[in-house]
Structures are given as structure tokens and as C-alpha cells.
Length: 599
Image 1: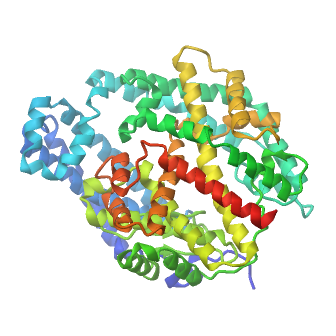
Image 2: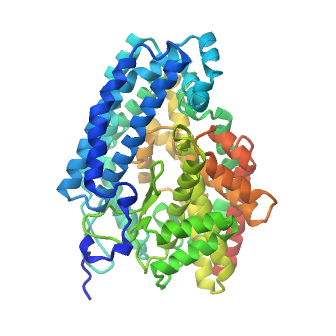
């Protein structure tokens, strides 16, 4: 049997997604693309007139919407084709054409929001009551609340002109860590040389061989140490840019500037950190269990990723994975399961690895079209069953949102994006544990959930705290140097890791290699997302009256409300510590179960 990766022509059509739901043939895509090129310049006819009357504003918004509907679908088709095969020149050309056109349309439409913001409050209040703008009230409210943070036209022009220069630190970081830095090779457990890279580093950390993990860790961080001053300077300028933008737009702090678009109070951010900090003892217990289960005298950071239960030997055909996921989600009711089953059977999914295909997995939808799923499913990788459930959560979120909301209100924010996917994983874990009596399999599933909670709730909260600390240092006028970064990060490592955990000196450099730090105040959403998902799943699994319908309404809400309001309507109040504490208690319960299975 050949082990080579097949081409797309070598796999069954039923194993590929069916993009004919987007465009029956390429000529129809070309027709829509040509329509966009021909039509978008007409938008200029309303420049300087958008605020003349409520009817004019409605006309502008509806015309822009007609462009955006086609833009979304045209881009969706081109991007999915490229994901199928990134070496296909036709696909590369098509995505390049779309990106260039979207840039031109964006430039042409740039006047719309400023003109909406320029409408005086009294006039705007009259506009918003006009039936002509009834469908746009949510969107207009979100735009208008940004008014106090939008500057004069000349000032906005200066900020726009400087935007590329003020974001160069991100490119510097990426080029340095992804291209220039060389990590060498590591002799693996078979005696072969394997390249050590940013992406392969994590694969070495899950190896059973302790010495191999240790060598990979020290060799990897030796390269970061050689570039630590450059990396520290890059991160410092990233923080300076965040503070500059916040000050320029009249926000009290960079943190508040980041939270404002989602209407999230700082108290939610601080409450997350406070709740996790107050519940670190179970994490310490888990590290003790790790050390004991792995037979180690002392535990290092490079010992925290290897599974406590060796990879279970099992093969799950794709059809079996589908049946398992559908059964796990049965509590969500007939409509949810039937639609998802139709999607699974109706070729929403591109199932298997093929030459040139994008790695990993994702869900991608556009209004009025299927929310497609890309997989690289492998029968011998049990985690891929979880990946299927995860991406199905995203797809069903998109499906319900677009069926229930207008185009301008259907897209849900990042704050909510991971809730539906993680929710599905929670239901899958519950289902598998109910159906599994084999101690090894139970330990594997529980260990997986514990590590997900550790990585998403504890680790991302530590990252969130670091981001808050370093931005506060910049805002008080103190210097952000390499020593400051290492010192502040070390303090957090000492807090979040147990006393009997060996903190290698190199680990202080971890703060210089996290890409998310260049997009500050984003990581906390992972921690709040998993907490909301756990809280919602527990309501459904406990059979609480109305919990399923409340969850489905959460999916239907899309982006029609701000995130906290959407979650509150579903029964989870993220302004209280309850969801975080509930997730921390789940971590402790699962730890009790794992200890009983392994000790």
C-alpha cells in the first residue's frame, strides 16, 4: 500500500466538499466578479451625501450591502479553492484578483462610516426612527458608539498614513522567528536527524523520551537567547504602538481601547485573572500527578505536554466519527442534528489530506451558503474526532446565525467564536465517558480535557495578565527592557506553576515567542470562551428546563447583540465569577477522576 499523499483526482468525490452551492461553475464566479468591478465605482455617487437624509443613508447602506454580499461569496469560493490546493496557479491568480478588488472597493467605501459619524446626534436620533433604517439599527448603533474615539479628518488621515509604519514590529517578529532564526536538527528517538523548527518544536515536547524533550527545549531556547534583545525591542514597540493608538483615540488605557468594540468592561478582564489566581492549587496537584505518572524526580516545562496516557491504539473511520459526533450532540434536538447530518452527508466537508491542501482544520461560511469544513482526517488519530466536533460547532453557529439574522447582523464576534466549538467538545467528552468503560480510554479522554482546560484557562489567563502588566508599565512612563520583560514574566511563572516545578532560566524567554502578544488583549477571549462553553454545556447536560432552546438562541443571535448580552440571554453572565469558577471546579473534578485511574 502506498503511503504517498494522494492528489485530489485520486480521492472520491464524496470525500470532497461541493462548492457548487457557491458557484455551479467558474464562469458564474467570473460573472459576479465582473459585476463587482463594473458596479462598485457607483458608490462614489453618494460621497458627501450619506448623511443628507435617512432615506439617502438607507440607500447607501443597501447598495453597499449588495456589494458585500457578492464580495463575501466571491472571496469565499476563491479562498476555499486555494485551501484545496495552494500550488494551483489558477487558484492563486483568482485569490490575488479578489484581494486586489476588495482593496479597491474598501478604498471607495471608506467615506461611509465617517459620514455616519459626522451626523449630529439630534439628526441621527430622528434618522434612526425612520422605518427606512429599521433593518440597520443594530449596525448603526455599533458604528455610532465609536464616535467619541474617531478623530478629525486630517487626524484620521495621519493615523492612516502611519498605520503600516506603526505595525512593522509584527512583521519584524515574524520574519525573525519564522525565517532568520535557525534551530538546527535534533536526533530523535530512532537515531535520525529531524529539523527543529517553530512548528516541529511542539511535536518534540509530546515525545515519551524525557531526554529528547529536554534537548529540544534547550536547543530551541538557545536560539531565542541569541536574539533576545532584538525580540525584546520588537515587543516593546508593539506595546508602545498600542498605547499610542489608545491615547490618540482618547481611551483611558490600551486595555480599555481593546475591550471597547465588544463592550466588555475591564472588570470582566480583571475578574478572570482574580478567579484563576485564587484557584491554582488544583493546577499544582495536576503537576504533582504528572511528575508521578511519568516517573520523574522533578518536573520541567518540557514535561507538561507529553500525554500521561500513551496514544491509544484505535482506528475510527470517518463515518464512525460522524456517527459519534451526531450521537454526542443529540441533546441539542432534532433540528440541530438533522441539519448537521445533512451537512456531513451533503458534502460540507473536505475530509482527507491531499497534495497541496492546507494543513489543519477550519470552518468557513458565507451568507446563504453552506458553512464548509476543511479537515485532514486520519483514522488513527483519535483527536481528529474532536476536531470534527469542534469545527461542526463553528459551522452550526454560522448556519443558525445566517438563517436568523440579516446579513449585516449575522457575523458573530471573536469573543463568541470559540464558545460553540468548545461547547461541542464538552458534549463529546461527556458522551465518550458515558460510553467508555475501558480505564485506559477513560484516562486518555479525561487527560485530554484537563490539558485543554490547563492550556486554555490557566495558560491564556497568565498571558492575559502579562499583557496587562507590560502595558501598564509603558503607560506609567517606565522603560520596557529585556530585563523587565523577563522579570515580569518570571514572577507570573512562579505564581502559576507549583513550588516543586523546576523553572529553567530559558523559560523566562517564552514571553518573547508568543505571536498573540503582538495582537494584545486577545488571549483572554480563549479563557472566557471555554468558561462560557463549559457553563452552557453543563446547563444542557443537566437537563435544565429551557437550556437547549437558550443555547440555540445563542447560536441564532450571531452578531445582533454585544457578546456579554448574547451570553447573558443564554444563561451565562460573564460579568460574574460564576462561569470561571464553574470551569475551575470541572478541572478539579476531572483531576480527581484521573488520579483515581492513574495512581
